Length: 193
Length: 219
Image (cartoon, rainbow over all chains, first blue to last red; front, side, top):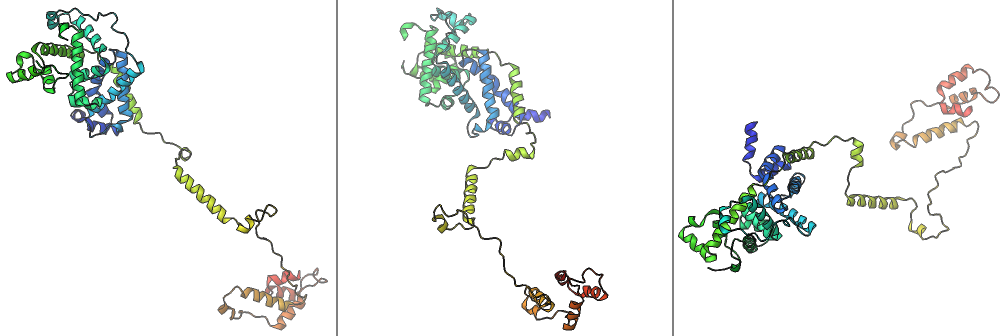
């Protein structure tokens, strides 16, 4: 039984999805273990670091898998499909809110970090807050690209697939996202921009 | 340094994977075509710290998985057995089938109405809409004479044999009463004056050979 269960671990995502369609609970358990935390992190990062909201969205995402597994096209990469569904949920949430909450009000935008101190990353706690604030200040598209590329380590092609936009657009968004983040964190001298 | 609005995938990958010191000469020249060393190092640091920060994101509650597993069990649980009348009332029939069946029923009904002729339809409101055939027919049948047992016997025989095939009609019945026998029997039957008296031996013997129909005729 243990061997049988462990053999599920090696199954590709598409095969697990086929089993889930037939009502296999263990397949769902394995799939959740594989993607649950990752998707939670994504929602947490995209939805203003709100833990409860991230959990709600993760639950909603996996409920879609339970209730409508047939929506997944086995010819597609499962991870890309899952992130696409998640990205659409995030977009809907942005639309619902219409504007992001002012969560950085207490943090100064003009962070006077010295370059040396930044590179040493000694004040990580402070930097963490500031980085989160800077990520929240990015536009939705730029934040999506930055999170998917550097935090979820997706390729340009995958991001293009997930966000349904050309690869050139993804590269451009990544460029501007990095530049804005660096600027808001004063990594460079202002005159260089 | 060449300033452009995006980085190539190669440079983006190098930023993630290698520090400036780890880059080979060829890789450095590729990077320098798109940006300078300081920018490269700063972006790399930013990406690294963001990634580390991302990994520190709190994990989802374990209750979340339990809830999802319970939902999965509930979703794919075996459906409860329903009574036959529940199935019957919940039977879904395509609309086109119902429409077609209704149309066929109406057409069959209209074509099968007795007396539904075009003439009736155009006759006006004073005519009855539905006119069926007369279902009771009275026929005048000539009564046989009182003492005509011979004729009644012949009538019975003729009526009986008209339902038989013609080749069978040629055969004579196995037992044919002679005229003398029939006269004897007719004389022995009780009439209006003697029918209250006990039956004589002749009557009793006649009842065994006379058909039941003839006995009823005489009362």
